[in-house]
Length: 68
Image 1 (cartoon, rainbow, N blue to C red):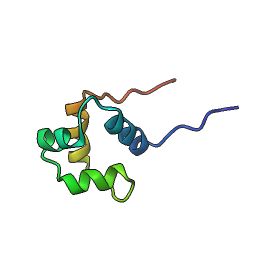
Image 2 (image 1 turned 120 degrees about the horizontal axis):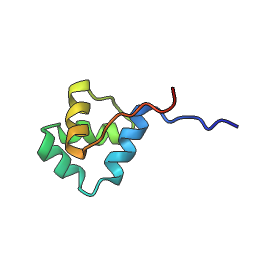
Image 3 (image 1 turned 135 degrees about the vertical axis):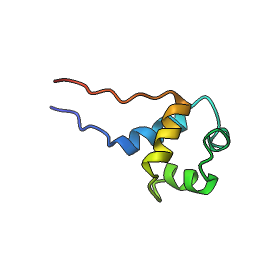
């Protein structure tokens, strides 16, 4: 049985929650509004691609395509 893949937004939320730093540190380093970041983590709003890029860079995340 094939395992359902998590949406990219869910993967980013998990990376933020699993980070070795606080959301406050992410806010300070990226300039993303604390409220916006908190609402994103709780699934209450989306983030712009620019904000996602800044978080990914700060957390040293990389998008990798699996398979073909």
